Image (cartoon, rainbow, N blue to C red):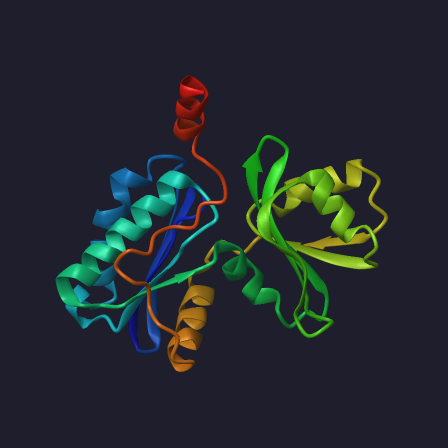
Length: 229
């Protein structure tokens, strides 16, 4: 299949295109400057992969939780391709994307993204117990995460901010054995596989009105609410 994948959930932007069994990936650790390069780099990566947007079978992106700005930029880019060329868009949970490479570990896996203010977007899935959900995807305080995992013997922590959360949990005297690896930088392979799983299962692509998944109000919304309350 021919496809484009974008991970825009955090400040590190990852874009990949694949043509059949060959792929091209660009990784841009540029903080909040994603808007300057997203569209030009999509064009460049598609060109390098020998693809035109009209030749894509689908696009896929992390749809949240994550950075408000990054998620909006990502979905705007792929929706433009959809509008112009009729290419379906698949949106995959950011946490599920970061969890996916570790699904065969036979351990509980905590996936996290730093949400600031002593909170993390996080979930915990126990792959030693048929994928049992221990902690639903949410905007959790570190105390709430601690409470949910404190009875576990071992816990693998994944996601771009796994080391930060690991340090915090250790500082709270968590007795659970915590395991981390260097977070995967290229998350697009997981996106390709998850999107194709969705297609194989016959699950629908995003509808026109579907947008990013936000788990909290933006700073602007919070300030507006404070000003009008």
